Image 1 (cartoon, helix red, strand yellow):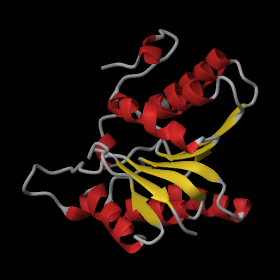
Image 2 (spheres, rainbow, N blue to C red; image 1 turned 45 degrees about the vertical axis):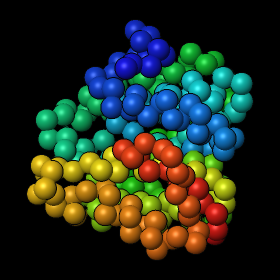
Image 3 (cartoon, rainbow, N blue to C red; image 1 turned 180 degrees about the vertical axis):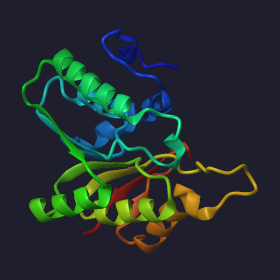
Image 4 (cartoon, rainbow, N blue to C red; image 1 turned 30 degrees about the vertical axis):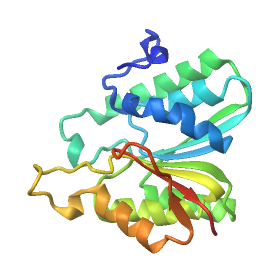
Length: 213
């Protein structure tokens, strides 16, 4: 089901992958009173536009969007230059809709580990209220994003992992290294004293609260 806000003809989206998450995000994310967001994997900007419209109408917020806009192995049939163009257009349209000069979107066009390393060096302490991991779906990359991103999330903040059970291969013949799940499970298991899984949430995304530094 398409979210009502995305029916606006000013947006230019070609997919609605994100929309299935909105029913959970609408109730879960506000509990963390987020003002600073970091998302890894932005594609056409649907999640960023949701955050702008949901949280940027009456307060100042800051969203950092990390993506190479070169695509991964699952994007071979996409014209990624057009995807990036749509991202830029959609974000600007969302900013115009809310009309709040206190809403800032920062675009980091680079590999996620480089962007995260730079943010860690600049921030020097965990300051983000929410991290959304939805970049490369290859297990080594997901684990890298999780571990590095953890150090940017404030204690009490929220980490969201997309496509928890996604795989490139058919059910029964999955390659664990081509799946986010094995990396997310490894992160949760190793960080079990510092990150707690939010229960009673849909399995397609995994939600984690940071409880330690």
